[in-house]
Length: 577
Image (cartoon, rainbow, N blue to C red; front, side, top):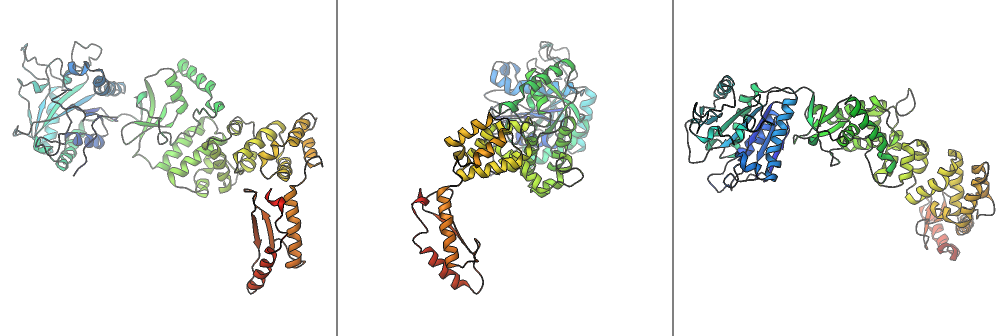
């Protein structure tokens, strides 16, 4: 059993001058003999021709006839969902210099069985008749060419009877939307409109309807004019709401966690420039499979245009079928780096998105994008470890941690090497934040100095944030900042006897283990032969035992290990405190 289409009004964007309309696409239950698949046919046709489409599968024709403009305009919600997209698409087609061609598809009732497969109406009515006025919506010459093309593809045609309301001559008929003098704001004689009624047997089964769609597509294709690569699009047709929509946007978006990254002043300055000079560089958009757009390049220009209240934007538009995903990443990268260098977080954001979308590891990312990104040492290939550093720092941002670190990397207040090689490897975000805010930001140590400071702090407590929270360490920090050489003063203070030089319990444990090692494993035994360390995570009665096991000496080693573990002095009260 085929799955029914969702009950909605489908609005599909296109790339040529055809706008496909289906006012009555609601499909009754399949048990009903009147069931039809005209909406399936229309959606297939829009995809095949890459044309615009407004297809109603929501409202039953018996309840709401969407070909009646008076009915539609009296219902604001229906007008917004059905009529306004038609007007908007027509303006987009006209705005790109193409003559709009509107093709309206209707199902014929099951009980009607005309000889011809298609009946065509174009507002013909009767000349000099006030009751059935002659209001043609397409030139006779164009209509004849379309009919010949349909007949050449084995679709027999006939014109609707001039007396029939189906010909669309009524002033309030959707067919007359752009021809009626009563709507001067919409009047556009350049719009050509044709109604096509399909015989029921052509759309009573889904597979048949889809086959007819293919034939219709071949018949109509000769009358289409494709838009240029650079075109004007409705700005409301651009989606930015999901991570998929932002797949190629590695310029940092506004994020409440990172206020400094929002660059409000930059967007405001850009908006003023566009307002004064116009848009100098078009956006680069990707037309999605659903017919809407997502941004390849120009997210900030898009933000500035939205701020200015612009309804249309000039854009270079690619189709998803034009290139592989990898090519779109290269296009986005080339466009972005052309105007301004990327900061380290944006590089990491790009690499993360490319890795996720393309399934590339760090070595492959380095090979594919390293040279274009301009990272690594000049004249040398970018290493996978360099890629790892950028992704590692960006992961801090993705997890919503350490906003000060990310902001300062972006604004070049923190060296990327310190962020990537010292801070990012710290697994505990509390350690990372405390070290940055308490030491790196106020003191600005060099990397060797910072490495020594970390070592001294870990002698106080393995967890850096707890070490930095100790009163004596806080006093040392405050006093050192008053010194003319604050980093040197801090190093001396941390190394002095005024602060504990080692964790007492850990030192005592090391002494006991050393004695056991020499007594049981021999004077020449090293830590590789036997060692025991306290668990830094739990600080409970738990030790981590390491020993060397040589082939042929397994039993002897295990007996010595058993003897060591049976010693009563391996644990004492200090270990569990």
